[in-house]
Amino acid sequence: MTLRPLALLPLAALLAGCAGSAIPQVYRPPAATAPPVAAQPVQHNRLLGNSADAVGRMFGKPRLDVSEGGGRKLQFAGSSCILDVYFYAPRTGAQAVATHADARTPDGRNAEVDSCAETLRR
Image (cartoon, rainbow, N blue to C red; front, top):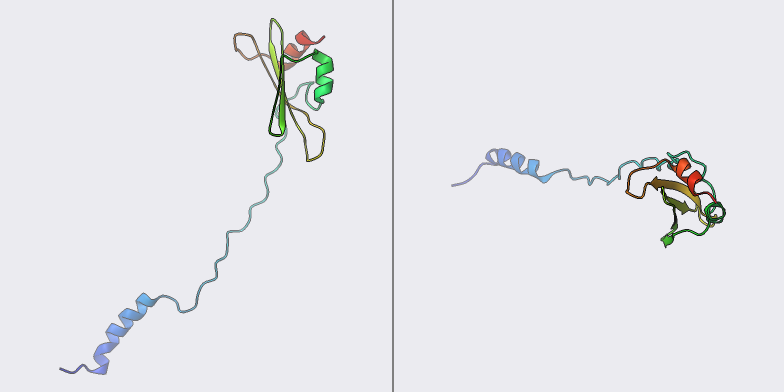
Protein backbone atom coordinates (compact mmCIF):
# COMPACT_ATOMS: atom_id res chain seq x y z
CA MET A 1 0.00 0.00 0.00
CA THR A 2 1.43 3.32 -1.01
CA LEU A 3 0.34 6.66 0.34
CA ARG A 4 -0.20 9.51 -1.98
CA PRO A 5 1.45 12.84 -1.12
CA LEU A 6 -1.92 14.63 -1.05
CA ALA A 7 -3.19 12.19 1.55
CA LEU A 8 -0.44 13.34 3.95
CA LEU A 9 -1.46 17.01 3.85
CA PRO A 10 -4.19 16.76 6.55
CA LEU A 11 -1.79 14.88 8.83
CA ALA A 12 0.96 17.49 8.27
CA ALA A 13 -1.48 20.33 9.00
CA LEU A 14 -2.59 18.63 12.21
CA LEU A 15 0.98 18.18 13.43
CA ALA A 16 1.93 21.75 12.48
CA GLY A 17 -0.81 23.07 14.77
CA CYS A 18 0.78 21.28 17.73
CA ALA A 19 4.23 22.73 17.13
CA GLY A 20 3.47 26.22 18.44
CA SER A 21 5.16 29.39 17.30
CA ALA A 22 8.59 29.04 15.76
CA ILE A 23 9.53 32.54 17.02
CA PRO A 24 10.31 32.52 20.73
CA GLN A 25 8.45 35.07 22.83
CA VAL A 26 10.49 37.43 24.99
CA TYR A 27 9.48 37.43 28.65
CA ARG A 28 8.37 40.87 29.76
CA PRO A 29 7.86 41.28 33.51
CA PRO A 30 4.73 43.10 34.62
CA ALA A 31 5.02 46.87 34.78
CA ALA A 32 6.40 48.09 38.08
CA THR A 33 3.91 49.66 40.41
CA ALA A 34 4.56 52.96 42.11
CA PRO A 35 6.46 52.64 45.40
CA PRO A 36 4.24 52.74 48.48
CA VAL A 37 3.61 56.15 49.95
CA ALA A 38 5.05 56.63 53.43
CA ALA A 39 2.30 56.17 55.99
CA GLN A 40 1.29 59.32 57.77
CA PRO A 41 0.55 59.06 61.48
CA VAL A 42 -3.12 58.53 62.14
CA GLN A 43 -2.80 59.82 65.64
CA HIS A 44 -2.77 63.40 66.74
CA ASN A 45 -1.42 63.85 70.23
CA ARG A 46 1.21 65.97 71.94
CA LEU A 47 3.76 63.17 72.23
CA LEU A 48 4.36 62.51 68.53
CA GLY A 49 7.63 63.90 67.20
CA ASN A 50 9.33 64.07 70.61
CA SER A 51 12.57 62.24 71.34
CA ALA A 52 12.80 59.56 74.03
CA ASP A 53 14.79 61.99 76.19
CA ALA A 54 12.08 64.65 75.90
CA VAL A 55 9.36 62.13 76.79
CA GLY A 56 11.47 60.93 79.73
CA ARG A 57 11.71 64.52 81.01
CA MET A 58 7.92 64.77 80.84
CA PHE A 59 7.15 61.57 82.75
CA GLY A 60 10.30 60.52 84.62
CA LYS A 61 11.79 57.06 84.59
CA PRO A 62 9.75 54.60 82.47
CA ARG A 63 8.39 51.40 83.97
CA LEU A 64 9.59 49.56 80.83
CA ASP A 65 12.23 50.46 78.24
CA VAL A 66 12.21 47.88 75.44
CA SER A 67 14.29 48.02 72.24
CA GLU A 68 13.64 45.65 69.36
CA GLY A 69 15.04 45.98 65.86
CA GLY A 70 14.95 49.65 64.92
CA GLY A 71 12.21 50.52 67.40
CA ARG A 72 11.96 51.38 71.06
CA LYS A 73 9.01 51.41 73.47
CA LEU A 74 8.83 53.32 76.73
CA GLN A 75 6.01 52.51 79.13
CA PHE A 76 4.86 54.84 81.89
CA ALA A 77 2.26 53.82 84.45
CA GLY A 78 0.19 55.45 87.13
CA SER A 79 -2.82 54.43 89.19
CA SER A 80 -5.33 55.51 86.51
CA CYS A 81 -3.60 54.69 83.21
CA ILE A 82 -0.68 53.08 81.38
CA LEU A 83 1.01 54.88 78.49
CA ASP A 84 3.13 53.18 75.81
CA VAL A 85 5.16 55.45 73.52
CA TYR A 86 6.86 53.97 70.42
CA PHE A 87 9.96 55.52 68.83
CA TYR A 88 11.34 55.02 65.32
CA ALA A 89 13.86 56.97 63.25
CA PRO A 90 12.17 58.64 60.27
CA ARG A 91 15.19 57.79 58.09
CA THR A 92 18.56 56.09 58.42
CA GLY A 93 20.90 58.04 60.67
CA ALA A 94 18.17 60.28 62.09
CA GLN A 95 17.24 60.46 65.77
CA ALA A 96 14.28 58.29 66.76
CA VAL A 97 11.10 60.18 67.58
CA ALA A 98 7.73 59.19 68.98
CA THR A 99 5.60 57.90 66.12
CA HIS A 100 2.77 56.21 68.04
CA ALA A 101 1.32 56.14 71.54
CA ASP A 102 -1.27 53.93 73.22
CA ALA A 103 -3.04 54.48 76.52
CA ARG A 104 -5.17 52.13 78.56
CA THR A 105 -6.60 51.78 82.01
CA PRO A 106 -5.03 49.26 84.40
CA ASP A 107 -7.87 46.82 83.61
CA GLY A 108 -7.08 47.00 79.86
CA ARG A 109 -9.76 49.34 78.51
CA ASN A 110 -8.65 51.97 75.97
CA ALA A 111 -7.89 55.41 77.32
CA GLU A 112 -7.32 58.75 75.60
CA VAL A 113 -3.58 59.38 75.12
CA ASP A 114 -3.48 63.12 75.92
CA SER A 115 -5.61 62.68 79.07
CA CYS A 116 -3.39 59.84 80.28
CA ALA A 117 -0.28 61.90 79.52
CA GLU A 118 -1.61 64.81 81.57
CA THR A 119 -2.32 62.45 84.50
CA LEU A 120 1.21 60.99 84.36
CA ARG A 121 3.07 64.26 83.78
CA ARG A 122 5.56 65.03 86.54
